Image: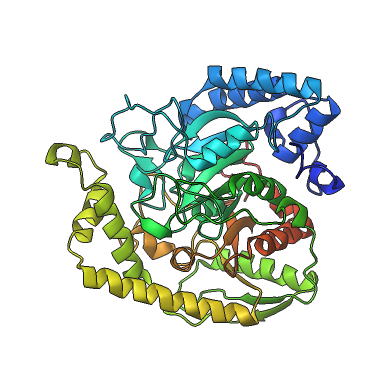
Amino acid sequence: MTTGTEGTTDRSAPPAGVRRDLTCPADLTAVELLAAYRAGELSPVETIESVLARVERENPALNAFCLVMADEARVAARASEERWRRGEPRGLLDGVPASIKDVMLTRGHPTLRGSRTIDPKGPWPEDSPAVARLREHGAVLFGKTTTPELAWKGVTDSPLTGVTRNPWDLSRTPGGSSGGAAVAVARGMGPLATGTDGGGSVRIPASFTGVVALKPTYGLVPHYPASAFGTLAHSGPMTRTVADAALMLDVLCGADSRDWAALARPAESFARGLDRPLTGMRVAFSPTLGHVEVDPDVAGRVAAAAAVFDELGARVEPVDPGFADPVGDFHVLWFSGAAKATEALDEERRALLDPGLREIVEEGLTYSAQDYLTAMATRMSLGELMGRFHDTYDLLLTPATAIPAFEAGRETPRRWPSRRWTSWAGFSYPFNLTQQPAASLPCGFTAEGLPVGLQIVGARHADGLVLAAARAFERARPQEWWPAPPDGHGPART
């Protein structure tokens, strides 16, 4: 099976302004690696050795990986090399390194979810759908990335694995809960990473670390085991370019018998649909969603990014969708999910939980069925509102996060008025409630040299349009699109 990466010259070309350097395979995108394998310029064995060397050098400071499967990855890379030698590559990602967020089951390896309450002995007999799809398409799985305990918050630190750090500044958080995945991609520790997103968990760390992430339409990427956080929880790709994200989504999407809510595979390839023009497209730009307080540096960068869509031929209009902050109802659903996720723990194991997680579990246990149904009613109303909004506007642009990365090891910045991560993530969790596709992509830097993310939101099932718009911005602003953290991990730019 070789469809999806052939037949379009653009899929094998690096983004504008990027020099393809085969001497350092860890710095290449998946699209570039596949082109090099096809041309016989590079082998999957060389690539995985380059990536593993990068992990060995970088991970001690960054703490992006909680498990490295080096021997297994080398065996897989040698098998891939032989398939490419025979001219018989498997699937769409043969020989491309990929990491797995440690909330996804991985056959033969523990999935500990950042928690000391899970027995690593297992057994661990099966893969989650995303992991299984990557294997089917020949990806080389080489490690599992860090997450806060049970993926409960928008930063990445846990009682089990400690603090994960931002490659742009080691004193800062990379965000979460897919923080390890974002750091891995940002530092060239594999071009592809899986993430999950229940309230911003791929988009927040993408914004804080300068990478690309997509929360797809709910059900497009199947999920198993079912999340305790219910239908808030999405799975999606984390990459350095939009082309890689689209290619990875082509692999991850499609029904799985273990997920009753999984959608059928779309008829069209996301990778092949990236080149649609934006001319005449109706784009709404909401700097604050009408209620989010935004850091001025972030606001300026995102406003400049929104103006690019005018240059690309879209009709951009400043407009808010018209909903109030749904954080209270999100908390009912999220905190109830946390209580469900920990319901089997006895008091001894419950004492091992992250203190913040224990707090929201206790709050979650106070909610009634009526509270839950009221939150669901708010969710349905919000979904209707956004459905009508997209009758008028094809896309919605917002900041991905209201603030840049802050001190690592904290749920909120110092002297912040609220204790919970949702207080600074007001651009992300509303679109988990509505199940819409939403991408975060880098759009510049703060004065301190920290990445800023632009969020692109589409109507449900408009994932291809979101990716095409992101790709158009990538081409228009390549110098802002390919941020690479500096060696030595100091502040990147001033």
